[in-house]
Length: 151
Image (cartoon, rainbow, N blue to C red):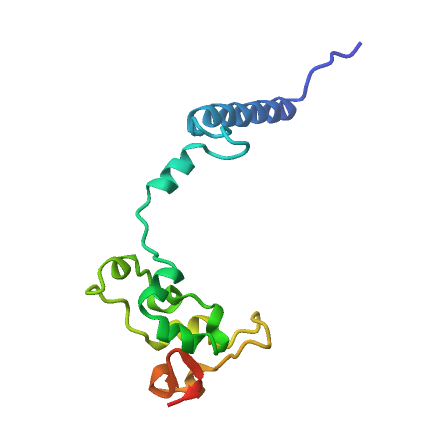
C-alpha cells in the first residue's frame, strides 16, 4: 500500500494561500473605516466630511445679481451654458465682498476646452496653440464674453 502523503510543494502552496487570506482578513478588520457600509456600499462619515468643507463657489445666480449686463451679452453667445467660475475661478469671496477680485482671464482658461484634442467632439471649436496665437493671449484678439467676435 502506498501512503497518501501530500507533496511538499502543495503544502507550501496551501500555507501561502492561508497566509495571504489571513493577512487580508486582519487588514480588512483593522483598515476598514467604522462607518463603511452605513449607507449601502459607502462610508457614512464621508457625508459629514463633505458638509464640513469650506464652500468656495458662488454659483451663476450670485454673479447675475451684479453682472446682469454681462449675462445679457453672454446669453447671445455659444458660451451661454458655461458657468462664470469656469473661467474666473471660485468666486464665493467676491460675491460676498466685491472688493475681492476674481482671477484675471488668461488664455489658460480658454485652452482647457479649445486646445486640439481628437477625443473632443468635432463640432467643438479646437485650435492648435502654436499655430493659432504664438505669443498673444486669447483675449488679445477675442472679446472675453463673446469669443466668436474679434476685437
